[in-house]
Amino acid sequence: MLALAWVFAIVGLVTTWIVGLAGAMKTVPRLEWREAIVAVPLPLLAIGLAVWCLSRPIPPDGPRTDRPWIAAGIPLAVALLALLILAVSYLDQPGGPM
Image 1 (cartoon, rainbow, N blue to C red):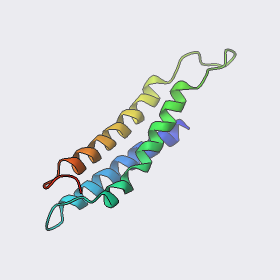
Image 2 (image 1 turned 90 degrees about the vertical axis):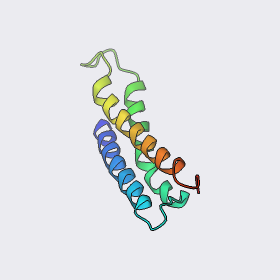
Image 3 (image 1 turned 135 degrees about the vertical axis):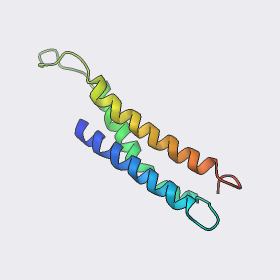
């Protein structure tokens, strides 16, 4: 599950970057909400998986006794960054949100 969080976070960041560039490269730079919504699911999946990896109970007889803070925190931060980039691209466009 942690590997999926990494994949979703990285692919979500790339998708967000492409959607932001596509909105900025139009003749009239405008990012419609229908175009922006395409970039939301992957970062949300990455956030959900990373939070699940951090919040699931650890069995006392398991080999690990600590949580994967770095391994799950990095995709969590990348996915939050992707959502932040998308929000700034959408909300800070000329003429306001569309």
